[in-house]
Image (cartoon, rainbow, N blue to C red; front, side, top):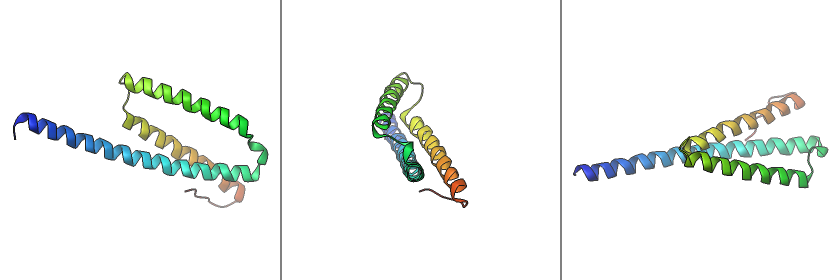
Length: 115
C-alpha cells in the first residue's frame, strides 16, 4: 500500500469513528428527549392550564428555526462540528429530562426516573 492509499484508508477509518460517535450522541439525545416528553406529559396531567396548542406550536416552530439556522452558520464557520453539537444537545436534553424527574419526584414524594 502506497502513502496515498494509506492516507485514504486512514481518512475513511476516522470518518467511520466520527459517524459512530455521532450515532451514539444522537441516541443519547433521543433517549433524553423521550424522558423529557414523559415529564411534560405528567406536568400537563397535573396542571392542564400549563399548555395551549397555538402558543406551544408557535414557540416550537420559532425555536427550531432559530436554532437550526444558528447551528448551520456556526458549523459552516468552523466554530464546532456536527458531532460536537449533537453531544452538547444530548447533554442539555439529559439535564432537561432530569429537571422533570426531579419535579415529579417532589410532587409524588418518591423518586421518579423518566425514560
